[in-house]
Amino acid sequence: MHTLDLITLSFRTISSHKMRSFLTALGLIIGIASVVILTSIGRGVHQFVLAEFTQFGTNLLAVFPGKTTTLGISGATISTVRPLTQADAASLEKLEHIIAVVPLVQGNARIEAGAKQRRASVFGVGASVPEVWKIRVQLGRFLPAGEINNPRAFAVLGSKLRDELFASKNPLGQRVRIGADRFRVIGVMEQKGQMLGFDMDDSIYIPAGKALEMFDRESLMEIDLLYNSGVSVDRIEKSVTRLLISRHGQEDFSIITQHQMIGTMDSILNILTLSVAALGSISLFVGSVGILTIMTIAVSERVSEIGLLRALGAEQNTIFKIFLAEALALSLVGGIGGILTGIAIAQLINYAVPALPVQIAWFYIVAAFVVSILIGVIAGVVPAIKAAQLEPLDALRTE
Image (cartoon, rainbow, N blue to C red; front, side, top):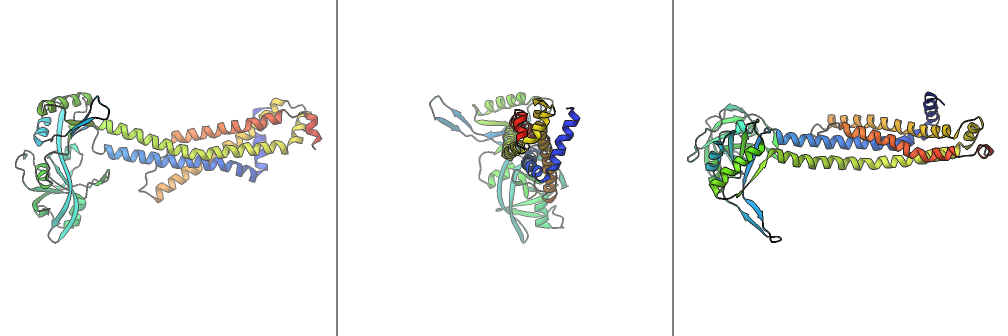
């Protein structure tokens, strides 16, 4: 039998039992649609989180106070936490290939402006925030540089905080109270959005020295460094390590590169996407059982047909191909239907819930389609073999 005839016969057989064929393919449609939807959401979350990590740029390195050293005795650790100072930050800024440095102290405090007040995030930082964090000043200017020891009480507002406290009024030159201290507003930042749970727009920026006093801290929480993109991160890390060891006498700090953070997060999110794909694959298994069941029933119902074909000279190989082709046709219909359904639902979710990131994961879609074809082959082999092994006379007697 020619291949074209085999394909035509398979689809005619399927179309002659529309309800049974639809219910059989439905298991695969649901399974593949589940894989498409779940992996699209997983991939969307993946890209969203990575975008959150990289919205401040990619050539960043962060230094944190304290380092835990594991000793040879099981379970014994020594935690050495020493302060990171603004002098450390100033020294790091002088290193070769370092473009800019941001000392950071973060807290939460009550912000008052006239009769209005609200709690907001307070970022004690340096003058290089716009350059390092890739956030621009919308109105006025940012904190001045060169004021480490005696910083002036200047403040820069996030866009949302400005709207809440001053509405349409120009905030430049106005006084705000942060906790017990008064600051003069010299700038307003452009809208930035959220970053890992922090609303950058509902915040206020003040000099790091003032924040250390306000929150009664001895150490900076971290120092962010922006380095030249043409230099390897390992080289920068070694330079930073050498300088801080020379200043502190030992390695009592931790360095985390953005590449490390992105790599770790990428691995976690890949596992998440793979997990939801495996969850959706359970429905594929159910669909394979459905195809196996229906094809087995079809062999039992068409014994006389098989006998007639054998009597007319059809070989066992031909009978095998006919039933295997029917199983493949069912899996093909289910696979295509599942992909189209899944993509349509994913796009509908993206339209109906814009806040939920959805991105079509084509790799998993192709993998699911290939699996559906394999299911057709595997689920169709046993019934096809059974049909091919029927004796012509025995099959005709069932008529």
